[in-house]
Image (cartoon, rainbow, N blue to C red; front, side, top):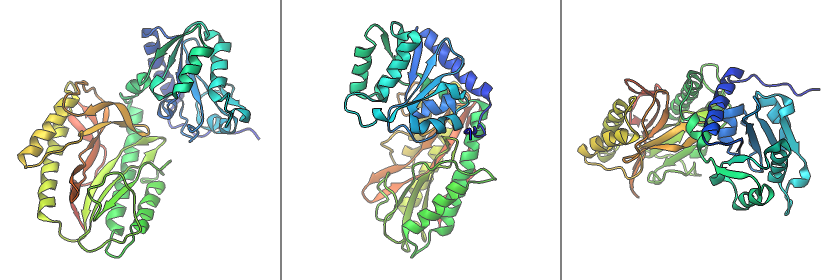
Length: 389
């Protein structure tokens, strides 16, 4: 039986639009062929979200071909045929002999393909920062006559500006995030194990919202008393107690796209210092959203938040947020003072206002938003409350 294609989250025209933008950037950089190896960028240009990036794989974008070619481990080729918008003839599976081989690996198959296609003496773009050092050296030796150009984050900057179709998918992910947080509010109770509450929340993230199921599980962090000063740990074997504080961060996922959400909860009345911190953070959040309008800079947004928070007697050491989309973080623009990236409509950010002040005090709240002419428009609908359970 022939492997059927899945329903594509975007029409073919959307993928061709993205590829056209990439090819325009290639032309500016005088690149004949671009090798895309980061999973998020591969997903952006093809629709592929299978978890095969633990071995060499690459999407080859040629200036002369409408569709890219994907080269991956042979056992992963059917998933690519199933998920990608491209024709099955553009999916190439390299043999298992290249797995756990000390001399040759999947990158050799990719280099063979690029050279065989006539690019051995032309300009080849690489996402150099994300390639193993030995692989970069392999390109130098095996494609010695080619000009190798570092294109790290070239595709990432392009995907930072979302289409309306992408915004729609991120709204779906945000609805799932909201559902997960409401489930957390329901199941977190004294005597309940952190693991059991997490299982219920994660199940909600998988089931989805509004008839749209989650299509993956992203990072999930539940940091409860006495670990509220931590930021990136999961649940423990402990049970919640009366007086416990719980900091949550997670996201719904739709076709690789995320809309992260953070909220703080308290079993019983929260401490006065936590309440004051919450009030300052919410005021700063609203100031940051107001500043996040077309033509402003990332620095302007961070300054608006930090200035407001200081008026409430608090400081935040870490950045205020970052570009977000496929696979959570986009390693480009940061909401921090000094980042002069100019905001454009439909750029999307996680306004991440987690504040880990010392070993006894940590707090989280966040919104995922898109830039508009009027300011940042949040995707989630959840109240900006310090939830008292």
